[in-house]
Length: 104
Image (tube, rainbow, N blue to C red; front, side):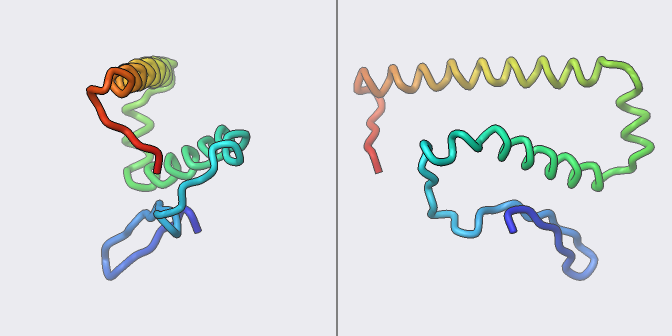
């Protein structure tokens, strides 16, 4: 299974790892399914983290308004923009020969 949960003695573990870490998926084949895959993984991860705390304390902290959701959304959008900027900088460095890259 891609995601799992197990216990060893008194310790609980959340497992999220591909079965074979050496597999590099073909982007053309996985591309059309990536959005659904990411959504499913995010949902599983959210549920796993929700189990790790006191639901009443978390709900009290988050409140009932939109502030927390808006904050997380704003962060995600800013993070995506930064990731795109970082990637553009990396590509420019590769093109300039500052960073060496090779196809595997």
